[in-house]
Length: 288
Image (cartoon, one colour):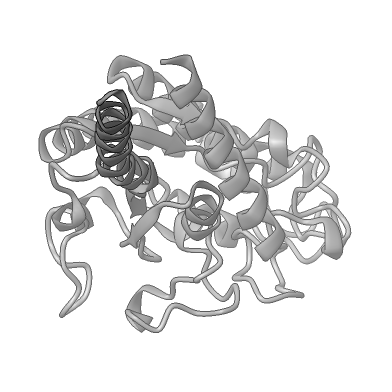
């Protein structure tokens, strides 16, 4: 009588284990639901291959959201779009392009965002600062934009900063279960620039980078207020700015020498930023 009873117990335990194991395995393998919001820094225009799902957004399938998603094994919905402003999160940027917020839901686990450069017209500053000829020919955009003691672009960034608080509040409302990662704009120029390799006088290259840093500071401060994680790409880009040899650049120069839009992330830059984001997500997960 003992043998059948023992066999019955063993069979029962094995059956219980067999029933429980698939559920645990399935739970472990559920991919993160990841939504990427943002502008061309996120979308990486002209980096190959292009995303055919929305050609108006000039988005790459090798942008930093795709790199991070691959590293994390996440299920990505990438709605980043070149030229986007925060207003394009609530309304269609192009006919047939849904507002970026529409991609968020209670099922969203992870959100990344880079936004602000177009809102402040900071994206126009590099073209305004071009100087093809050395001093004293031409004029300094830094001097022009700080004339009379008022920093035109600095004032615009400060005025926009509260709008980013609203953006982060809205993300939290629409994706209440998501961890939010704010990715900064990085290093465009080293101190003093590299005229004439890049056609910006030293004082103007420093001014452009200072305004990018100011915007990054506003993004970082808002992220801290909203329990989001700021991913700093500035230090990561040291030695890989637009002044670096073409093969080493994370940010393309004023004249594109690769599959990247001028003064936007290169394929190497997108890989580096995507891996940095993935590392930040893993670090956040392991600390909980």
